[in-house]
Length: 194
Image (tube, rainbow, N blue to C red; front, side, top):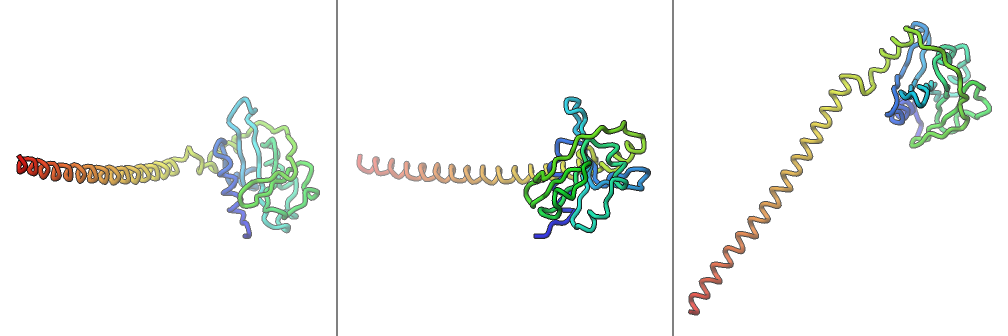
């Protein structure tokens, strides 16, 4: 199975449910973009941020440079290249980056990303983060979709419970009716014998 950039992005999103994240985060007035960016929203984790550049071809990777990633590198503690398994050798990864591979089920760290000193965010960066984090759980449209999904699931569960309860009630009523039919017949036999 050939993995696409969207497959890898979907996996990064799934693995980032406890983080603030943005896809296609723009830097420098939209001149440069990073595929995926996360922020751990905890002081105890020093608000650690990570940038992820997805590469699914060697040619695309070869065109990338520190200069192209300069803005992403400025606002992140760690920079990762994320690729399908076996696309790149760890020796090809620049000293300022790490390498993770997605095998379709799990991420594997092939080269650990070095910790960096990030700069304070600029207003351009903050606005870009807000604009591009629309898919986060704070997004009203997504919350409405989640609410609709949960309501439909709840309705389905209630319907299943109603069916189960009706079935149990019918079984109970049938067994009660059988007992009532059998009991008068026995009573009649007792009267005939007496």
